[in-house]
Image (cartoon, rainbow, N blue to C red; front, side, top):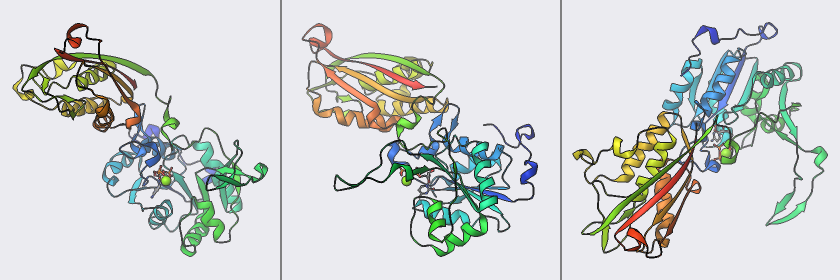
Length: 390
Ligand code: CTP
Ligand code: MG
Protein backbone atom coordinates (compact mmCIF):
# COMPACT_ATOMS: atom_id res chain seq x y z
CA UNK A 1 0.00 0.00 0.00
CA UNK A 2 1.28 3.46 -0.84
CA UNK A 3 1.65 5.58 2.25
CA UNK A 4 0.43 9.15 2.35
CA UNK A 5 2.80 9.68 5.26
CA UNK A 6 5.56 9.49 2.69
CA UNK A 7 6.19 13.26 2.66
CA UNK A 8 7.16 13.28 -1.02
CA UNK A 9 3.52 12.50 -1.86
CA UNK A 10 1.98 15.32 0.16
CA UNK A 11 0.93 18.49 -1.66
CA UNK A 12 1.03 21.74 0.28
CA UNK A 13 -2.29 23.54 0.61
CA UNK A 14 -2.56 26.05 -2.25
CA UNK A 15 -2.00 29.64 -1.06
CA UNK A 16 -5.46 30.90 -2.03
CA UNK A 17 -7.09 28.37 0.31
CA UNK A 18 -4.74 28.83 3.26
CA UNK A 19 -7.18 31.00 5.17
CA UNK A 20 -10.02 28.46 4.93
CA UNK A 21 -10.45 25.32 6.95
CA UNK A 22 -11.79 22.78 4.46
CA UNK A 23 -13.21 19.37 5.40
CA UNK A 24 -14.56 16.48 3.35
CA UNK A 25 -17.05 13.73 4.05
CA UNK A 26 -16.64 10.64 1.86
CA UNK A 27 -19.66 8.35 1.89
CA UNK A 28 -18.84 4.64 1.81
CA UNK A 29 -21.58 3.09 3.96
CA UNK A 30 -23.87 1.82 1.17
CA UNK A 31 -24.36 -1.81 0.19
CA UNK A 32 -23.65 -1.48 -3.53
CA UNK A 33 -26.66 -3.69 -4.28
CA UNK A 34 -26.95 -2.65 -7.94
CA UNK A 35 -23.38 -3.90 -8.61
CA UNK A 36 -24.49 -7.44 -7.76
CA UNK A 37 -21.19 -8.23 -6.00
CA UNK A 38 -21.29 -10.26 -2.79
CA UNK A 39 -19.51 -7.32 -1.11
CA UNK A 40 -19.67 -3.50 -1.09
CA UNK A 41 -18.45 -1.93 -4.36
CA UNK A 42 -16.15 0.31 -2.27
CA UNK A 43 -13.89 -2.77 -1.95
CA UNK A 44 -13.85 -3.60 -5.68
CA UNK A 45 -10.35 -3.73 -7.14
CA UNK A 46 -9.53 -1.53 -10.12
CA UNK A 47 -5.94 -2.39 -10.96
CA UNK A 48 -3.81 -2.16 -7.83
CA UNK A 49 -6.28 -0.32 -5.61
CA UNK A 50 -9.79 -0.69 -4.28
CA UNK A 51 -12.37 2.03 -5.05
CA UNK A 52 -12.27 3.31 -1.44
CA UNK A 53 -8.51 3.83 -1.58
CA UNK A 54 -8.62 5.53 -5.00
CA UNK A 55 -11.19 8.04 -3.77
CA UNK A 56 -9.46 8.78 -0.48
CA UNK A 57 -6.08 9.08 -2.18
CA UNK A 58 -7.44 11.67 -4.62
CA UNK A 59 -8.76 13.77 -1.75
CA UNK A 60 -5.73 13.34 0.50
CA UNK A 61 -3.11 14.08 -2.14
CA UNK A 62 -4.96 17.19 -3.35
CA UNK A 63 -3.57 19.01 -0.31
CA UNK A 64 -6.85 20.92 -0.02
CA UNK A 65 -8.29 19.29 3.09
CA UNK A 66 -7.72 19.77 6.79
CA UNK A 67 -9.98 16.85 7.67
CA UNK A 68 -11.29 13.85 5.70
CA UNK A 69 -14.00 11.64 7.23
CA UNK A 70 -15.16 8.38 5.65
CA UNK A 71 -18.60 7.13 6.68
CA UNK A 72 -18.54 3.32 6.64
CA UNK A 73 -20.94 0.56 7.60
CA UNK A 74 -20.26 -0.92 11.07
CA UNK A 75 -19.24 -4.30 9.56
CA UNK A 76 -16.67 -2.71 7.25
CA UNK A 77 -15.28 0.06 9.40
CA UNK A 78 -12.23 -1.88 10.60
CA UNK A 79 -11.23 -2.97 7.07
CA UNK A 80 -11.84 0.55 5.77
CA UNK A 81 -9.74 2.09 8.54
CA UNK A 82 -6.73 0.06 7.38
CA UNK A 83 -7.02 1.53 3.87
CA UNK A 84 -7.67 5.17 4.79
CA UNK A 85 -5.45 5.70 7.84
CA UNK A 86 -2.24 5.89 5.78
CA UNK A 87 -3.82 8.87 4.00
CA UNK A 88 -4.52 10.69 7.26
CA UNK A 89 -8.30 10.19 6.90
CA UNK A 90 -10.62 9.14 9.72
CA UNK A 91 -13.60 6.79 9.75
CA UNK A 92 -17.01 6.98 11.36
CA UNK A 93 -20.06 4.73 11.34
CA UNK A 94 -22.56 5.59 8.58
CA UNK A 95 -26.32 5.02 8.61
CA UNK A 96 -28.93 3.01 6.74
CA UNK A 97 -29.57 5.80 4.22
CA UNK A 98 -27.21 8.19 2.47
CA UNK A 99 -28.75 11.14 4.34
CA UNK A 100 -28.24 9.35 7.67
CA UNK A 101 -24.61 8.65 6.78
CA UNK A 102 -24.06 12.37 6.11
CA UNK A 103 -25.71 13.26 9.43
CA UNK A 104 -23.43 10.92 11.34
CA UNK A 105 -20.30 12.16 9.59
CA UNK A 106 -21.38 15.79 10.18
CA UNK A 107 -21.19 15.10 13.92
CA UNK A 108 -17.44 14.45 13.46
CA UNK A 109 -16.68 17.54 11.39
CA UNK A 110 -14.48 20.00 13.19
CA UNK A 111 -16.70 22.97 14.25
CA UNK A 112 -14.23 25.57 12.95
CA UNK A 113 -14.63 24.26 9.38
CA UNK A 114 -15.37 26.96 6.77
CA UNK A 115 -16.10 24.82 3.71
CA UNK A 116 -17.44 21.26 3.69
CA UNK A 117 -17.41 18.91 0.72
CA UNK A 118 -19.65 15.84 0.63
CA UNK A 119 -18.60 13.16 -1.83
CA UNK A 120 -19.85 9.74 -2.92
CA UNK A 121 -17.05 7.28 -2.22
CA UNK A 122 -18.21 5.47 -5.35
CA UNK A 123 -16.77 8.28 -7.54
CA UNK A 124 -13.08 7.37 -7.55
CA UNK A 125 -12.24 9.58 -10.53
CA UNK A 126 -12.93 12.93 -8.84
CA UNK A 127 -9.70 14.90 -9.21
CA UNK A 128 -8.32 18.07 -7.69
CA UNK A 129 -9.83 20.34 -10.38
CA UNK A 130 -13.32 19.06 -9.60
CA UNK A 131 -12.72 19.80 -5.93
CA UNK A 132 -11.35 23.29 -6.55
CA UNK A 133 -14.29 24.25 -8.80
CA UNK A 134 -16.87 23.47 -6.14
CA UNK A 135 -14.79 25.01 -3.33
CA UNK A 136 -14.40 28.28 -5.29
CA UNK A 137 -18.14 28.42 -5.83
CA UNK A 138 -18.88 27.71 -2.16
CA UNK A 139 -16.50 30.46 -1.06
CA UNK A 140 -18.11 32.95 -3.45
CA UNK A 141 -21.78 31.90 -3.35
CA UNK A 142 -22.32 29.49 -0.45
CA UNK A 143 -22.40 26.29 -2.47
CA UNK A 144 -20.96 24.54 -5.52
CA UNK A 145 -22.90 21.65 -7.07
CA UNK A 146 -21.30 19.98 -10.11
CA UNK A 147 -23.78 19.25 -12.88
CA UNK A 148 -23.66 17.89 -16.42
CA UNK A 149 -26.25 18.17 -19.17
CA UNK A 150 -28.71 15.29 -19.45
CA UNK A 151 -28.15 13.35 -22.67
CA UNK A 152 -31.15 10.99 -22.57
CA UNK A 153 -34.73 12.24 -22.85
CA UNK A 154 -35.97 12.05 -19.24
CA UNK A 155 -39.60 11.05 -18.59
CA UNK A 156 -41.85 10.92 -15.57
CA UNK A 157 -43.41 7.45 -15.55
CA UNK A 158 -46.15 5.81 -13.51
CA UNK A 159 -47.08 2.12 -13.74
CA UNK A 160 -45.11 1.68 -16.95
CA UNK A 161 -46.70 4.69 -18.66
CA UNK A 162 -45.00 8.01 -19.43
CA UNK A 163 -47.09 10.72 -17.79
CA UNK A 164 -44.87 13.72 -18.35
CA UNK A 165 -41.91 14.81 -20.51
CA UNK A 166 -39.97 17.56 -18.76
CA UNK A 167 -38.13 20.07 -20.92
CA UNK A 168 -34.61 18.68 -21.28
CA UNK A 169 -33.12 22.18 -21.40
CA UNK A 170 -34.09 22.60 -17.76
CA UNK A 171 -32.65 19.28 -16.61
CA UNK A 172 -29.17 18.57 -15.31
CA UNK A 173 -27.56 15.51 -13.71
CA UNK A 174 -25.77 16.43 -10.50
CA UNK A 175 -22.59 14.82 -9.23
CA UNK A 176 -20.38 15.05 -6.17
CA UNK A 177 -18.25 16.45 -4.56
CA UNK A 178 -20.74 19.12 -3.56
CA UNK A 179 -19.29 21.98 -1.54
CA UNK A 180 -21.05 24.21 0.99
CA UNK A 181 -20.31 26.84 3.55
CA UNK A 182 -20.13 24.62 6.59
CA UNK A 183 -22.40 26.77 8.77
CA UNK A 184 -25.13 26.66 6.09
CA UNK A 185 -25.06 22.93 5.35
CA UNK A 186 -24.89 22.14 9.10
CA UNK A 187 -27.91 24.40 9.62
CA UNK A 188 -29.75 22.70 6.74
CA UNK A 189 -29.15 19.22 8.12
CA UNK A 190 -30.20 20.38 11.59
CA UNK A 191 -33.55 21.71 10.33
CA UNK A 192 -34.55 19.39 7.47
CA UNK A 193 -35.93 15.95 8.28
CA UNK A 194 -36.34 12.97 5.94
CA UNK A 195 -34.15 11.24 3.37
CA UNK A 196 -32.81 12.84 0.20
CA UNK A 197 -30.83 11.72 -2.84
CA UNK A 198 -28.09 14.30 -2.38
CA UNK A 199 -26.98 17.22 -0.26
CA UNK A 200 -28.03 20.00 -2.62
CA UNK A 201 -31.61 18.86 -1.99
CA UNK A 202 -31.25 19.15 1.80
CA UNK A 203 -29.59 22.55 1.33
CA UNK A 204 -32.40 23.68 -1.00
CA UNK A 205 -35.10 22.36 1.36
CA UNK A 206 -33.64 24.59 4.08
CA UNK A 207 -34.15 27.63 1.87
CA UNK A 208 -30.63 28.06 0.52
CA UNK A 209 -29.99 28.31 -3.23
CA UNK A 210 -27.77 25.43 -4.46
CA UNK A 211 -25.42 26.93 -7.05
CA UNK A 212 -24.36 24.89 -10.05
CA UNK A 213 -20.84 24.56 -11.43
CA UNK A 214 -19.82 22.63 -14.51
CA UNK A 215 -19.38 18.93 -13.73
CA UNK A 216 -17.26 16.46 -15.63
CA UNK A 217 -18.04 13.31 -17.60
CA UNK A 218 -14.88 11.71 -16.23
CA UNK A 219 -16.16 12.02 -12.66
CA UNK A 220 -18.63 9.20 -13.03
CA UNK A 221 -20.19 7.13 -10.29
CA UNK A 222 -19.77 3.38 -10.07
CA UNK A 223 -23.30 2.02 -9.81
CA UNK A 224 -23.57 -1.05 -12.05
CA UNK A 225 -20.94 -3.59 -13.01
CA UNK A 226 -20.81 -2.09 -16.52
CA UNK A 227 -19.34 1.08 -14.94
CA UNK A 228 -16.11 -0.76 -14.16
CA UNK A 229 -15.73 -2.80 -17.33
CA UNK A 230 -12.48 -1.96 -19.09
CA UNK A 231 -11.11 -0.06 -16.10
CA UNK A 232 -8.43 -2.67 -15.44
CA UNK A 233 -5.03 -2.18 -17.01
CA UNK A 234 -5.25 -5.38 -18.99
CA UNK A 235 -6.96 -8.72 -19.40
CA UNK A 236 -5.76 -12.31 -19.46
CA UNK A 237 -7.50 -15.53 -20.39
CA UNK A 238 -6.94 -18.91 -18.77
CA UNK A 239 -8.03 -22.35 -19.94
CA UNK A 240 -8.59 -25.43 -17.77
CA UNK A 241 -9.53 -29.05 -18.50
CA UNK A 242 -10.14 -32.12 -16.33
CA UNK A 243 -11.59 -35.61 -16.58
CA UNK A 244 -12.44 -38.16 -13.85
CA UNK A 245 -13.60 -41.76 -13.93
CA UNK A 246 -17.19 -42.65 -12.96
CA UNK A 247 -17.31 -45.46 -10.40
CA UNK A 248 -19.77 -47.13 -8.01
CA UNK A 249 -19.88 -46.10 -4.36
CA UNK A 250 -18.97 -42.41 -4.75
CA UNK A 251 -21.08 -39.22 -4.57
CA UNK A 252 -21.37 -37.20 -7.76
CA UNK A 253 -20.43 -33.55 -7.09
CA UNK A 254 -20.30 -31.06 -9.96
CA UNK A 255 -19.72 -27.35 -9.46
CA UNK A 256 -20.15 -27.87 -5.72
CA UNK A 257 -23.62 -29.36 -6.18
CA UNK A 258 -24.56 -32.91 -5.12
CA UNK A 259 -26.28 -34.71 -7.99
CA UNK A 260 -28.22 -37.91 -7.22
CA UNK A 261 -26.84 -40.65 -9.51
CA UNK A 262 -25.90 -44.31 -9.24
CA UNK A 263 -22.20 -43.51 -9.67
CA UNK A 264 -19.76 -40.82 -8.64
CA UNK A 265 -16.39 -39.53 -9.77
CA UNK A 266 -13.20 -41.17 -8.54
CA UNK A 267 -10.42 -38.97 -7.23
CA UNK A 268 -8.26 -37.99 -4.27
CA UNK A 269 -10.54 -35.03 -3.50
CA UNK A 270 -14.31 -35.08 -4.08
CA UNK A 271 -13.30 -35.22 -7.82
CA UNK A 272 -15.53 -32.26 -8.77
CA UNK A 273 -14.32 -32.13 -12.36
CA UNK A 274 -16.09 -28.83 -13.11
CA UNK A 275 -14.58 -27.03 -10.11
CA UNK A 276 -11.18 -28.40 -11.12
CA UNK A 277 -11.45 -27.09 -14.68
CA UNK A 278 -12.53 -23.65 -13.39
CA UNK A 279 -9.69 -23.58 -10.85
CA UNK A 280 -7.08 -24.49 -13.44
CA UNK A 281 -8.44 -21.82 -15.80
CA UNK A 282 -8.25 -19.22 -13.00
CA UNK A 283 -4.73 -20.26 -12.04
CA UNK A 284 -3.62 -20.24 -15.66
CA UNK A 285 -5.02 -16.73 -16.20
CA UNK A 286 -3.26 -15.63 -13.02
CA UNK A 287 0.07 -17.09 -14.16
CA UNK A 288 0.10 -19.54 -11.23
CA UNK A 289 0.93 -23.27 -11.05
CA UNK A 290 -1.96 -25.70 -11.69
CA UNK A 291 -4.00 -27.56 -9.06
CA UNK A 292 -1.88 -30.71 -9.43
CA UNK A 293 1.09 -28.70 -8.15
CA UNK A 294 -0.78 -26.64 -5.53
CA UNK A 295 -2.94 -29.44 -4.11
CA UNK A 296 -1.01 -32.69 -4.87
CA UNK A 297 -3.10 -35.87 -5.01
CA UNK A 298 -0.59 -37.74 -2.85
CA UNK A 299 -0.91 -35.23 -0.01
CA UNK A 300 -3.17 -36.69 2.73
CA UNK A 301 -4.29 -33.12 3.55
CA UNK A 302 -6.39 -33.12 0.40
CA UNK A 303 -7.94 -36.59 0.72
CA UNK A 304 -11.70 -36.31 0.25
CA UNK A 305 -11.48 -32.51 0.43
CA UNK A 306 -14.28 -30.37 -1.00
CA UNK A 307 -13.20 -28.86 -4.32
CA UNK A 308 -15.44 -25.88 -3.54
CA UNK A 309 -13.16 -25.19 -0.59
CA UNK A 310 -10.13 -25.38 -2.89
CA UNK A 311 -11.87 -23.10 -5.40
CA UNK A 312 -12.29 -20.56 -2.58
CA UNK A 313 -8.56 -20.85 -1.87
CA UNK A 314 -7.72 -20.23 -5.55
CA UNK A 315 -10.04 -17.19 -5.58
CA UNK A 316 -8.21 -15.89 -2.52
CA UNK A 317 -4.82 -16.34 -4.22
CA UNK A 318 -6.03 -14.25 -7.17
CA UNK A 319 -7.53 -11.57 -4.92
CA UNK A 320 -4.23 -11.28 -3.04
CA UNK A 321 -2.58 -10.56 -6.40
CA UNK A 322 -5.23 -7.91 -7.27
CA UNK A 323 -6.50 -10.08 -10.11
CA UNK A 324 -10.27 -9.81 -10.63
CA UNK A 325 -12.28 -12.62 -12.21
CA UNK A 326 -14.50 -11.04 -14.86
CA UNK A 327 -16.03 -14.03 -16.61
CA UNK A 328 -16.18 -17.80 -16.23
CA UNK A 329 -17.42 -20.02 -19.05
CA UNK A 330 -17.41 -23.77 -18.57
CA UNK A 331 -18.76 -26.90 -20.22
CA UNK A 332 -19.41 -30.27 -18.59
CA UNK A 333 -19.28 -33.32 -20.85
CA UNK A 334 -21.35 -36.21 -19.53
CA UNK A 335 -23.42 -38.91 -21.23
CA UNK A 336 -25.48 -39.29 -18.03
CA UNK A 337 -27.06 -38.06 -15.76
CA UNK A 338 -29.07 -35.18 -17.20
CA UNK A 339 -27.61 -31.98 -15.73
CA UNK A 340 -29.95 -29.26 -17.02
CA UNK A 341 -31.86 -28.99 -13.70
CA UNK A 342 -28.66 -28.41 -11.70
CA UNK A 343 -26.92 -25.81 -13.85
CA UNK A 344 -28.31 -22.72 -12.08
CA UNK A 345 -27.27 -24.14 -8.68
CA UNK A 346 -23.77 -24.81 -9.99
CA UNK A 347 -23.52 -21.25 -11.33
CA UNK A 348 -24.59 -19.81 -8.00
CA UNK A 349 -22.24 -22.01 -6.00
CA UNK A 350 -19.21 -21.24 -8.19
CA UNK A 351 -20.01 -17.51 -8.31
CA UNK A 352 -20.49 -17.29 -4.54
CA UNK A 353 -17.25 -19.18 -3.90
CA UNK A 354 -15.24 -16.96 -6.25
CA UNK A 355 -17.00 -13.81 -4.97
CA UNK A 356 -18.54 -12.56 -8.23
CA UNK A 357 -22.15 -12.15 -9.42
CA UNK A 358 -23.65 -15.35 -10.86
CA UNK A 359 -24.33 -13.42 -14.09
CA UNK A 360 -20.57 -13.68 -14.75
CA UNK A 361 -20.57 -17.48 -14.56
CA UNK A 362 -21.91 -19.56 -17.43
CA UNK A 363 -22.05 -23.32 -17.55
CA UNK A 364 -23.30 -25.56 -20.29
CA UNK A 365 -23.62 -29.33 -20.42
CA UNK A 366 -23.29 -31.66 -23.37
CA UNK A 367 -23.08 -35.35 -24.19
CA UNK A 368 -20.41 -36.55 -26.60
CA UNK A 369 -22.90 -38.50 -28.73
CA UNK A 370 -21.84 -41.84 -27.16
CA UNK A 371 -18.29 -41.34 -28.49
CA UNK A 372 -15.11 -41.83 -26.48
CA UNK A 373 -14.58 -42.24 -22.73
CA UNK A 374 -17.37 -39.81 -21.85
CA UNK A 375 -19.73 -41.32 -24.43
CA UNK A 376 -19.15 -44.82 -23.00
CA UNK A 377 -20.24 -43.47 -19.58
CA UNK A 378 -16.79 -44.23 -18.12
CA UNK A 379 -16.09 -40.70 -17.06
CA UNK A 380 -17.10 -37.04 -16.96
CA UNK A 381 -14.94 -34.26 -18.41
CA UNK A 382 -15.04 -30.51 -18.10
CA UNK A 383 -13.28 -27.54 -19.63
CA UNK A 384 -13.41 -23.87 -18.69
CA UNK A 385 -12.14 -20.49 -19.77
CA UNK A 386 -11.77 -17.59 -17.36
CA UNK A 387 -11.21 -13.93 -18.18
CA UNK A 388 -9.42 -11.87 -15.55
CA UNK A 389 -8.57 -8.22 -15.18
CA UNK A 390 -5.01 -7.42 -14.04
N1 CTP B 1 -23.96 5.56 0.96
C1 CTP B 1 -23.72 5.70 2.31
N2 CTP B 1 -24.66 5.26 3.21
C2 CTP B 1 -25.80 4.69 2.79
C3 CTP B 1 -26.07 4.56 1.42
C4 CTP B 1 -25.12 5.01 0.50
O1 CTP B 1 -22.66 6.20 2.71
N3 CTP B 1 -26.66 4.25 3.71
C5 CTP B 1 -22.92 5.96 0.00
C6 CTP B 1 -22.45 4.81 -0.91
O2 CTP B 1 -21.44 4.04 -0.27
C7 CTP B 1 -21.99 5.51 -2.16
C8 CTP B 1 -22.78 6.81 -2.16
O3 CTP B 1 -23.43 6.91 -0.89
O4 CTP B 1 -20.61 5.81 -2.15
C9 CTP B 1 -23.79 6.87 -3.30
O5 CTP B 1 -24.75 5.85 -3.14
P1 CTP B 1 -25.04 4.70 -4.19
O6 CTP B 1 -24.28 4.90 -5.44
O7 CTP B 1 -26.50 4.50 -4.22
O8 CTP B 1 -24.31 3.45 -3.48
P2 CTP B 1 -24.98 2.21 -2.75
O9 CTP B 1 -26.13 2.66 -1.93
O10 CTP B 1 -23.85 1.52 -2.04
O11 CTP B 1 -25.44 1.31 -3.98
P3 CTP B 1 -26.90 0.65 -4.22
O12 CTP B 1 -27.90 1.78 -4.16
O13 CTP B 1 -26.78 0.02 -5.57
O14 CTP B 1 -27.09 -0.36 -3.10
MG1 MG C 1 -27.87 3.57 -2.88
